[in-house]
Length: 183
Image (cartoon, rainbow, N blue to C red; front, side, top):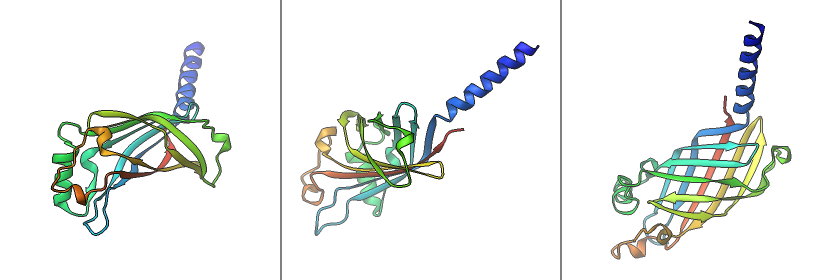
């Protein structure tokens, strides 16, 4: 009986320790903008991004539902989902990668620069990205933010000629995540 109780205790403790090595969010924020001066703003945000970070290895993954991107103009959102992102065929955008040289011991309340290395998948295409990211630690919460530029052609997205002058050739993507320990 003692052996069984000891065994169960170690299983519970190891599960707690493993859970504490992961930080996550279900309310991460991703914005993108492809606006052109003198035309209507082409900008969207998604506040329901899920991300998980293994603090021992620096491995990170993020998932955004494409239909979760919101625009100021409903018609623009409809065009984005139907014509550009084709969200009915490609409902998710994902990032799987690693934070280079990540260590919790080096984090403070001040943001420190790191590089993300990984694969971004959107519209059925996967591209390697390596953006600079900034990370801070405050009250046992990890704050992670970054900004980078993408080109729609990388993801086989064709901008129709009728709106080509109204949409930028590149898209600025920014994200902000507040990750908490996974329990």
